Amino acid sequence: MKKVTGIGGIFFKCKDPKKVNEWYQKHLGLNTGPYGASFEWYQEADSTKKATTQWTPFEEKTKYFEPSGKDFMINYRVENLEALVEELKKEGVVIVDQIETYDYGKFVHIMDVEGNKVELWEPLGE
Image (cartoon, rainbow, N blue to C red; front, top):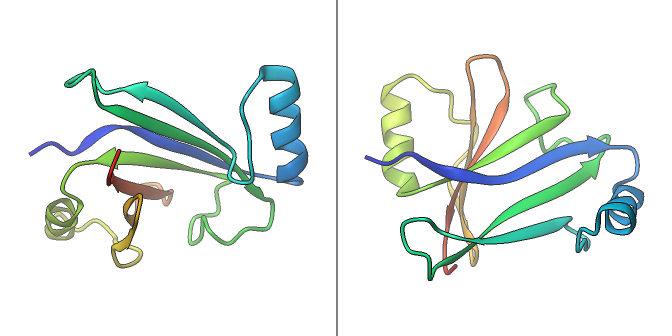
């Protein structure tokens, strides 16, 4: 069973996300918006299928990364999120919340062995 298929996003805390977005746009050319920047690429297995990786600065006081106390969170792209969550439960991995589905994918959060909150994402409709 395939598990992680790539990095879905990098999320980090900062004092002023708007200012950080503007700085990265001005100095490094990122095409930023309210949710950061998306990097498009093509999947290795099928070079006709476009995919994205998300880069997003969050407010310094965000609670989105809790219960982790870290200033970052990595989002991993996965296949078949429901089956993976069932397997992770059997392996004793802490599942933080329930799977949520949006028009762009399914998400769930887990905790790694060092207490880092990890976001798992099964993309839909790319």
